[in-house]
Image (cartoon, rainbow, N blue to C red; front, side, top):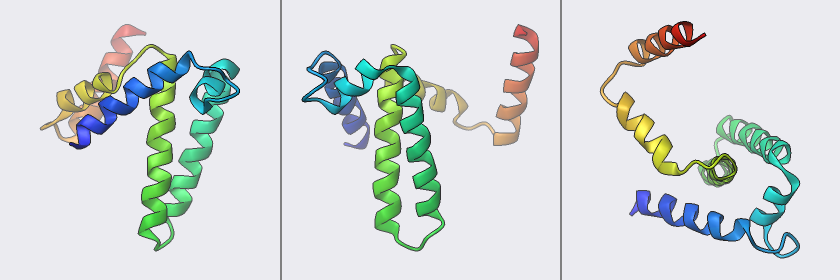
Amino acid sequence: MSGEILQRLAEVIEQRRQADPETSYVASLHHRGLDVMLKKLGEEATETVIAAKNPDDAALVSEMADLWFHALVVLSARGLHPDDVLGELGRRFGLSGITEKANRGAAGKRSG
């Protein structure tokens, strides 16, 4: 059910991209451009960090939901889908974080 929610939300975001920016928050973000979306994503990330420093679990969950939502909007703006991120997480599954990070560094050096 959890993964299904991400799929459904991504579908709704795609549908609302084309809506009237006066009546759809998603459409208004897309209409205003990537920089506005990224600023909002940064704000939500900051609010999530602040909530994580406090003992209110409900506030943390709420802020994390906002962060994930805005991350999905940014993915949409770039023509990407949650499946792209889930695929990358699947690729990393079973790797130690240290090994995976080292692999990313080596790949970046080869392509640069």
